[in-house]
Image (tube, rainbow, N blue to C red):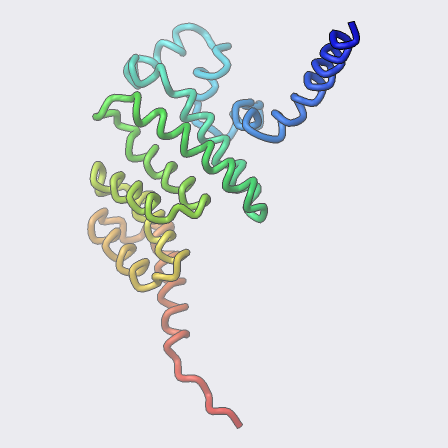
Length: 215
């Protein structure tokens, strides 16, 4: 009888403590609030809440293709985890954890969607960003390069690759990447590219200035 009471007490204690643990960890990425959905693609609301009219849901399914649409809630969860990783940037443990959750969700969509799914480059870029946040720099580079192989005109992929090079101290490679981005995409006035390129060039020129002799 004493054992049964002990077991009951343990179950009560575990049940009471588990939500707090879950909310602080994995489950947080899988709870999409109205605030989250407001900053996500419109299809996330249709896919996750399923509170919209049936014809809206079917419209998204037709646009994505039924096989791809089936798995797109994982993409939305990946976006939430990615946002959480950025939000916890100064906390390496939390940042890395949520980045890994994001990477897992994006990988799921990539594995289960069709090879010619038009969103693959975008998903690869997001995966690369998650890998960058987790300090998995070589896999991140491969993700960006894979996105560019599919869509060479993806400005986001070029910019993300340039940001990665800059982050790891390869400033010259970052500059070359952004210059190549302008050449390939034809986006000569794209602010995403130009702001980074001008900043890198400025930093590079300052670092090459001769230092003043000590007095």
